[in-house]
Length: 439
Image 1 (cartoon, one colour):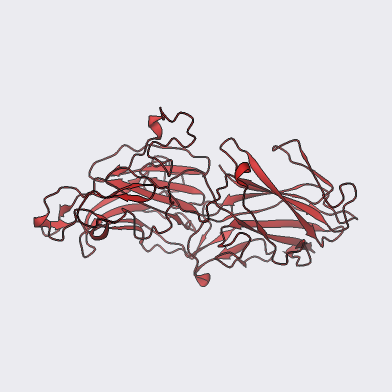
Image 2 (cartoon, helix red, strand yellow; image 1 turned 30 degrees about the vertical axis):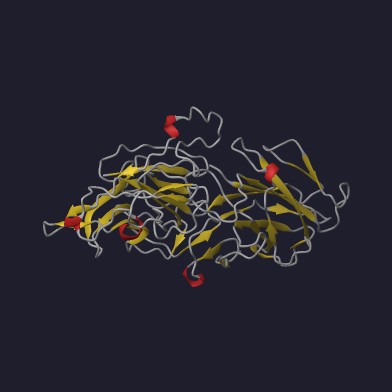
């Protein structure tokens, strides 16, 4: 599982257990820390310097550029925010983070670090730290959401419908309890492990039929391809290590990704009887640039209408369509088919419904592995079709054998006109990567 780590050292030195043998020393005075001061050392794994976090594959990545720290102090058994503790010179408690290009983490677990001084710690007190990371328009700037404390000890926060929250990637975690000594320095090192608080999904499809027999027995034009979920959350609570950290979840079916053939297919015609082709064709995408292949929708990119934050280097296989998004986890198990794909006519009536299946569904009451009710769970990635790398179709992310890439890494968009074998992949950037099939 790929995570973001925060290491808080509120003492003169900090030994980073399990990471390195280096000591991180208080730069203010290595031998005698100032009363009530300490150092927070931030370690960030698998960063990217992109200004946004566009989803172009299931590959490990994050684009956290701002980190909010909330320092909680024990008051007679109840924790509450200690507003007297500050990041030195910063009243907002938001840390700017951008990994230098030369120090960017790699797949072998390399991490970069940033030291931040805290001031205002009380002597002989108990503390813990909540940290959450996100992408802001400006590094170190305000989040696109407002986190609200939901528990009596202020250690759990929420974003939801009241904040008009749009699903985005958030990492969050809570430290262990630590104490300060008579000098106001922490007596133990403190670690905050930040887990991804949302889920991810992509749909990579091909073989889209131009027409199907409708309910009235006549051929109808396939107007849209829509990926549906069986429930929808309006927000999340965090930090959480639970599978289900969604809030205000309803069981109403909701569209996650919509592909409109009238705007993206290069051989679209409204009248099914005038359509000479059995399958739709689409412009090929290389580095997010159109390679035109048809006469209709000449400049169109084959993306879902909701897919607006697209990587600049996205490359797709010929005649495929693609979309991806972050999804809010459910609040509990929903005992029904989790994801479906509908091929619809121009008025939204289903001409064909495909159940999206997986072989590694977690076992819960009424849902054994291999069933269709697998739910949307925190830090799981749901991949309908296989795409391991954004910028190529052979999956050779590391370029270690560019001339002979591993064929198992090659893009494999799901052909909706055929049955497909379901292949399970495990990606350590997520708890579970579901490489999903349809039936």
